[in-house]
Length: 159
Figure 1 (tube, rainbow, N blue to C red):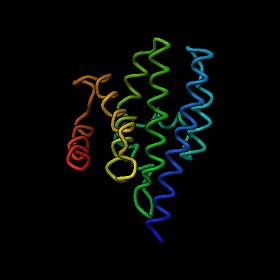
Figure 2 (figure 1 turned 90 degrees about the vertical axis):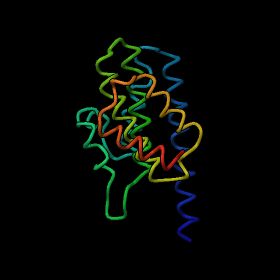
Figure 3 (figure 1 turned 135 degrees about the vertical axis):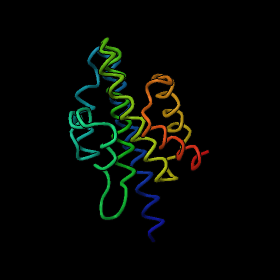
Figure 4 (figure 1 turned 120 degrees about the vertical axis):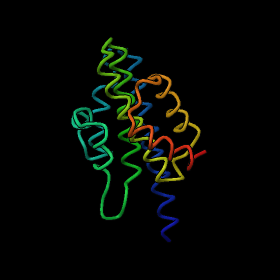
C-alpha cells in the first residue's frame, strides 16, 4: 500500500513540475526578460509552501532543513523548490543579473541533489541532466564544500 501511494506521489509531483515548466516557458517566450516570474512565485508557494523570496534569502546550507519533517525528507517539495530556483536563476541571468543568478544556482543544485538522493523515483534523465547543467553554469569555483559533499553522496547513490 505504501509503495503504491509513494509511486502516485512521485508521478503527481513530476506531472505538476512539468506543467509549471510549460507555463514558465510560455511566459518566457512572451517576455524573455520578465516572463515566468509571476508563475515561479505562485508555483513555489503552492508546491513547496515556501515563498521564493525566502529561498533566495536563506543561506544555501540551511535550505534542506525547510523540507525535513517528522516523516523524513520531503523530496517532492525539495525537487520543486530546486527546479523553481533554477528557473529563477535563469531569469536573473537573462536579465543580466549575474550575481543573483550565481547566488541562486547553488541553492537550486543542492535542493535537486537532496531530492534525487532521497527518492529513487525522481532520478529521471531530465532531473539528472538538470544537475549537470547547473554544475556547468557554476563552474568549479561555484560549488561550496557542503554541496561538494552532497554531490559525492549523489554520485554514489545515483551513479
